[in-house]
Structure formats: structure tokens, C-alpha cells
Image (cartoon, rainbow, N blue to C red):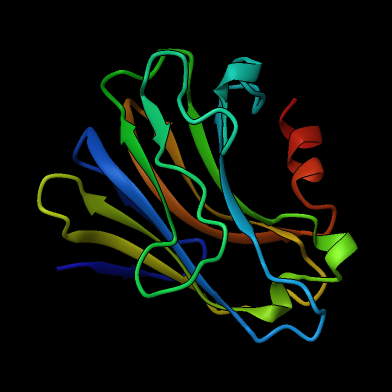
Length: 184
């Protein structure tokens, strides 16, 4: 049975291999442009900085150097039910220097398309058992992000040699660039 998390809630992740599912729906846009939301993953060290440029996983770099994190590909429309994008995680392969994995969703070309997360609804992040497809943890973002164009949905972090998931739900208005600046 899945545990439904509240913002800020943390839970231990017991399985070394799992899938992170991300989903969302967009309101019919009055901006005249289709939405394209993108999941990105940042593998960070103790200093909260990327281990290397190759540890920024997104639609143009689908795999971390050792294969611990693998983005399954970009969904350009977000149409349909269920996960819009997925990331496979194998913590048994992750570098010893890694202490955090931040999962961010951004709106592609948000400023030129006049779009923000206030026009996005039913957003969620979930952790699935890779073998069974069963949802272990789920966090539904219910805030209205009226000016934000990027949102950290959740993070996986190591504390006392245990990996945990935190439901974050924190937005930034500068899009992906804000997170690149933060983690580089």
C-alpha cells in the first residue's frame, strides 16, 4: 500500500532499485502554445553541488556516468493518465560521494510561452517498485505556483547510510537556470 506524503514529510527507501514517476496535467492554455514540461535530476555531493556536469540528467543526457540514474525520455505533451516521465534509480550503483538526488520539473521555454506552474494541475511524484510497478510513496503537489516555472518535486538523500525520500514541492521563477545556478 502506498504512503501518501505531505510537503516536507520524509520516508526511508528500502529498495536499492526503484522508479521515480512524475505526472501532471496542464490547463487549456490561453497562451496559444502547447506545454512541454521536463524532468531533470541533479546528483549532488555533500556540498550540495553537482558531482560533475554528467551528473545533471535530463532529455539531452539520459544517464549518469555509472548508470545509477536513467531518465527514460522526454514526453513532449504530457497527455494521458499516469506518469508523464520516469527516472530509473539504482542506489547500489551510485557514487559514494553522492549524498542527494534532486528531482526538478521545469516548463520548457516558459517565459517566451508566457507559462507557469499556476497553469499546471494534478502534479505528483511517486516512487514505484521497479519489479511490481506498485507505488510505494506518493506526493501530490497541491500548491498554486502562480509565478514559478520550475519546481523541485522531491529529493532522495542519504543520512546515516540510509536513503530517504523527502516531499519538497518548492518552486523557483527563473526556470531550469535557477537550479543550474544553485547546483553548479
